[in-house]
Image (tube, rainbow, N blue to C red):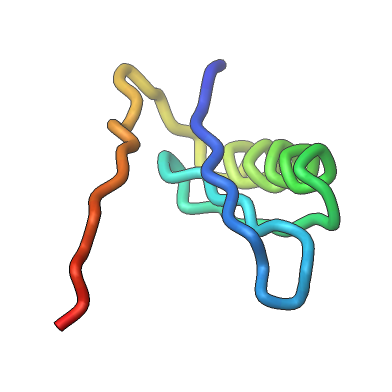
Length: 67
């Protein structure tokens, strides 16, 4: 099963990892650790709440000018 991981730097260091298909969120000190934690959390979530995925979210960026 191919799912999406979005990683952002955490304020306290390390990374926050989000899976938008399920909403699971974890963190880790490194990118690899954050992804490994996200895999585990998402797997546990899907054991409890099985889902079928036919499409993936479109992940993009946008620029926002401050007033």
